[in-house]
Length: 453
Image (cartoon, rainbow, N blue to C red; front, side):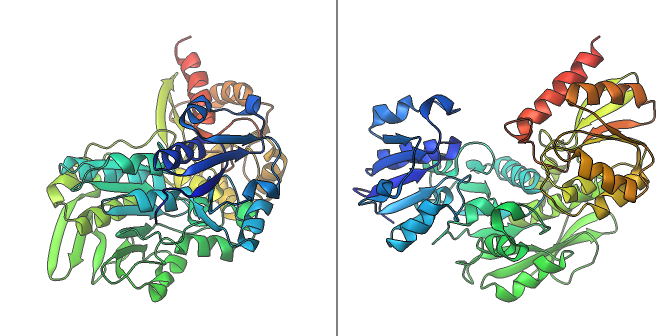
């Protein structure tokens, strides 16, 4: 796809939108960046765009914005159900996501990873394994910088490893990673995608354009993901934490083991991994699968697994206060992710949860909370519904508080060794924070203030 001379409208002045607008302008396109927010409400500085020649249309958005446009590029925060997107399709304007632009600018093989949970850890692990093997590697997409920015500097012989969200996949056209992975599928973002079927279909777009020369890594233990193999043109490589596989990667006793095309490779033991929790075993299996299919050896994979301690905001150890360890799991923005966090501990958890409610089913989450927690502290817009669901599952001690400061202070009052305090919200952060990173950092600041008093 050639962008030179094309008239392109970019919707959404977030990190990805600003990055792709500047890049497309540099590629020779005539770019207009539009956002419903006026300039004084933008979180990002757009002065560099104006200097580069990008036209800004901020505040009001009307169909006139699309006059004479060749392409409409969507930031991840802009839904395909946006009225301007519908209007663009009516006018036969090509609509694409920022990662579609990145794909057309990329000159090296791409590894793309999606799923409801575990994307960031798995993507980061793959990037570390590639770098350990001496490969120039850019990591981006739904983490770090915009993918369209990351791919431009990677030279032939290098690789791109991308975390891809369902939002980003909505607007793909030709997107074809050489290696794709789907980690799991559980209900999430239904407010955006409208139905679980739409959400699953968005995830499946990651392999829609693959051929028999490509690879698709699927979670054998997730029935919905396993069934996707029937739709795949690529070579399917399964991973399993629970079962021995005739082909793929699995846990054999305590060893991560690969069987593939007459090869039998042992990587390391689960006990040797620095990451903890069954969900991280799954993430490690998927990361090793991608690395193996790319040609990386077991020693480099094992070296990373033995030293990688995890990503920020995902069951991240913060500090010990009065002999009680505090963990930041702000990245758990849905109940399934929080379930994985609870499963990582043997019990005696003081759990802090709540935020903006996604209206997902809470039954299994609260059943496990009843088993694993000694107290549940709830806050945010979801606190009332969460408290009701917790009471229905006989969670033994439930508190509702007004804000994070009160929640952390109450946790300190309640917690005694060998208990742990875990922030794992099972909700998005948008009722109180701009994103889960901001929420996690605030929690860590509050914990550190306790630790150093």
